[in-house]
Length: 77
Image (cartoon, rainbow, N blue to C red; front, side, top):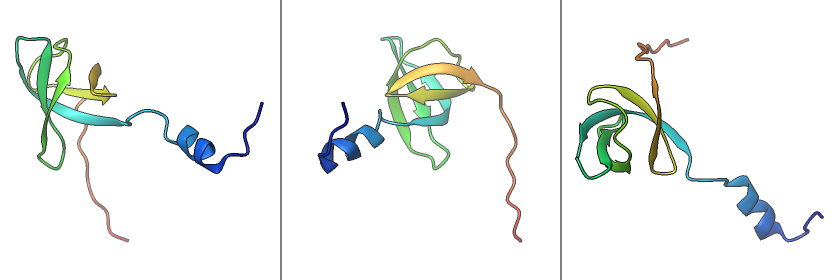
């Protein structure tokens, strides 16, 4: 059944907390890891399944899986 409530429609668009590729700084030994975003912000997330120095995908505050380290470049047109 479809809802007409605009607020409920908006909430359905915001599924979850989002995903991000981050670098693992350290495994804390208590079931969490410290990760660093591309902008340099360090975050504590659940999971220790990936070694420090690796790139991982985080989703909903948890480590999900390791991703390959790829180079990035900026091209101005």
